[in-house]
Image (cartoon, rainbow, N blue to C red; front, side):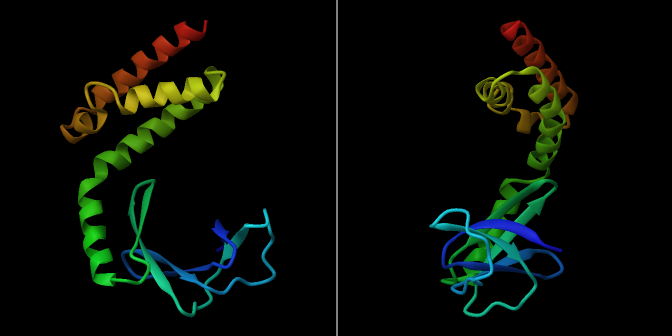
Length: 160
């Protein structure tokens, strides 16, 4: 499996995994066969080759969310602690909200003509009152769906 990542020149990337996380090892070696997008940035295909001189970034995953944590090799123990805390802070309710917002994305792209319109639509929901994360946490997902429907109606009348 190949994954593409945009990385600064001089930094190579390869994946590794264990049973609960996927980690990216950042190396100082950049294969010369990688395409150059700009003089300062290359697009690297991640491979399963072992990395040398590695620094590991731990990735917290919950549904479609992925949050990378790295101490640049300074303290793997600290990175583990941070991973636990981040996983607790951004739990299933955030993953569920991401899925719900993704479901509204097709409507927004097909209906709202500009990036700014779509940005305002989604930011209005995410930062709205009541807080959609709290609603999901309380088991009130229907209220979040109603918020989105109200935002759709408001956005549609604004652009009409």
